[in-house]
Image 1 (cartoon, rainbow, N blue to C red):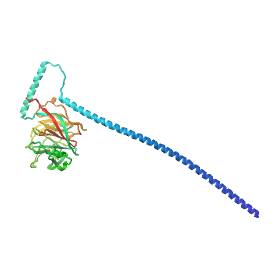
Image 2 (tube, rainbow, N blue to C red):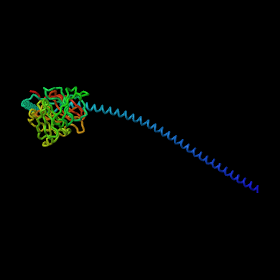
Image 3 (cartoon, rainbow, N blue to C red):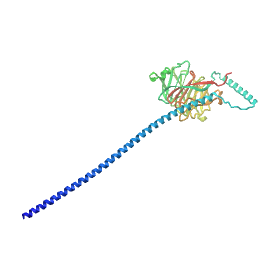
Image 4 (cartoon, helix red, strand yellow):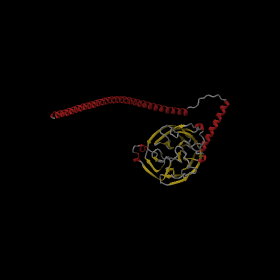
Length: 404
């Protein structure tokens, strides 16, 4: 029995030893399998790292190429801009040359005509000139000049306000240096400056004096004449006001037919414009009864009465401003998108200037369009407001006709 028990124990121990041996073999196989999988993962991770490095290198190369291309584009852009600026300058110069040639040269065309016809034309021309001399004598005025061309422009100042007007007092007895500054198309505060140096200085607001009006103005068509300020009263259809700078006394009248439309299609905020020239005070407005054409009226500044009224042939479409010199209305036109301002319609109240004497007169192209333009007969200068820039224009004049 004892031997059987011993054998049984030995069998059990042997079986247990075999099981332990099989378990260890399985564990070793599992470990080897896991190690193999880890090695495969490491290989794949290494390959991924290699691919990522290659991609990064490709991206670096592409980025470098893009930077080079951008540098080239910027260089080409700068070169193209310089070429365009140069081309625009050459075009503007060419325009000036063409305008100069058009205003200083005459046609050299050769025509064969009959001698009797030439003699007849000469006689008719002499009779025409004589008739113009008689008309001028009847006008009883020494003002006989007309605008020939704009010879220079000067930018005096730039403000942030795109609409406004500025001027001097049109009176030889007033301070010839004082500047009046009207800001906006609706206001009642005028800034005055002792001279143009104070006005154009950096701290100009500290040098300004404030003049408060009893009424608000409308538009930019004001005028200063013999120490009176003339303006369109805001909130009224056609009431115009004369305000004395000496004693603050006001007088007003209604300008019938005015106020419904602006005489300037490109400056619709101005319904009634004032102008001063060598012959006195004028108003400029549009009348629906004559298809919106501009109406020119001569006013007596002492008692605000109408002396005479002219229905002109000048259209308000695409007009931006106008002024009067020696009884002649000059209307300035422009493109609705902004461009080079030009005088394309002239109306002479004395009927001396004929149509062949009025070529298109161009202003120097600078900014966009004028919200106001006023002529001062004392210094014979045009005061313009061009998109917030305060401009001065000097011009050459010529006689309306040959003196006898």
